[in-house]
Image (cartoon, rainbow, N blue to C red; front, side):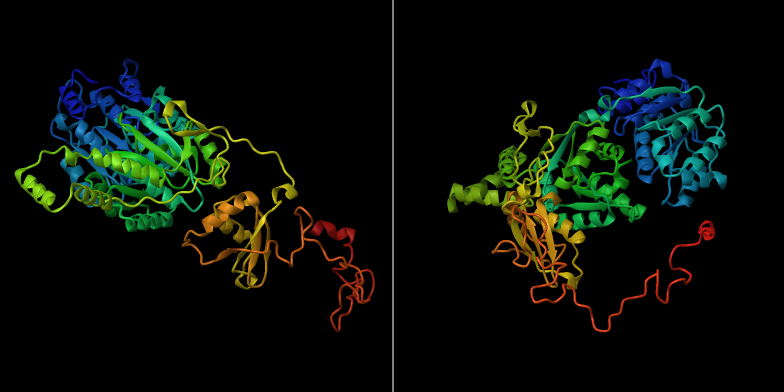
Length: 619
């Protein structure tokens, strides 16, 4: 692929990176209609836009020349929202401009500003930075923008979301009016359009559809899992999908730390990435992924933008994102630059509807399926072992001597079994996974169908909400369980309900009455969910020490119920004199009726009875 045939330096750099075909955004940005014009581009992450604007501004910076002269005041300024994205852009432009002798300098928060000052003083052709650090250098007169020919705002929508509008306006106001301005954004909200009208000159607007952008090379999967199977599902997906590196997203720092520890205990090489880490720690974590010392990275959404790992073939969303845009950015870490990738979203029954809305909002058609099972992973391990590159290598004389010695002492079956044990020993063990079913309950296979285009991968039919049923129908034959926590330990139904759902892998609709006593709690589960609920209780739980057991005698004797379910019956003497003639409610000794507001000593005092009409307006 030759974007600029008159620039051999760029053709050489692109050829070395095996760029065979331009992406849609690159075709649109580098068309004849865009030459020399301001651009307002809407394109998804991972669509190749860094190379697109790098080549688009090359003509402005170089003119007819093929290489730069010695650097002085910068000719181009690239502004990015985060440190990771800015450093990624610097690396991309460095290889793209390497044969043009360009000097690309970064200015980002969290790095040594004195080093950046020194590099700027030595001269640069292109400066890449974050808004806050660039403004700081401008105010201290360390950055000379008098000779700028092009300014690029990358991920402009994210910069507005992070509150950088004033910084962006300050940067744009200090740059020459003759500059060329290019704005790139995943979406084009009102704030971006307003900024473009104010600081661009008759900008050419380009929108690249999602189906034509970087996400076309991503296979989306949504996996149904039980509520307490999130970690197990992550393990099995990592074992099932063979990828040089994988990125797992969690919503909180504590979830990142917990999952990283869990995966380390199972034998995975894992690093973490979150906002609490220093820039140096982030850099080391990403470098470990790039050079192969680590295979898995567990991260918050700080890694959803600006992280580009060449061998990242798998993204797992352990927690659902907050909105469709974050979903796209997370998934967009894989399937970049023409490479294929897989994005997996783990969905517990209670979050099924939200997951469907997120996918719909992002315009994504995901394949719904179950998490990989132990048997599937074991079978795949066998296939991978037989195809291992170790068997394709040519044996040396020393290898043959050792092989003959082994055969003389052991049978071929014993040697093969030992080899199989060695192969399995280097792999983390897969976990048992429960299928909650399309409807949410484990073992419920209604609505499942075979996807003709994907072999044995199961695709679900659209879920149908069942018709309302009476309580007597729902809880006919229900089963009662006991939890060893009661009111003396502040047990309340409002926090017991989600705990029961999590421990048993069920939905709240499967839970009937919850009866809290002093030292224990008794609750009922529908007959359809009770069997699997009991099975799930046998699995260890690290979040609480509450023991839950089956009540062998059915409903509690102290909680009579109407036939077929319903609320507990009230005693027949409720509110009436009992059989012995005693009143239903005994008055405590010394009890006296308080004087009412219409009589007695309190009558007529301020604050009792109705307020005078004249005082109503005062309140």
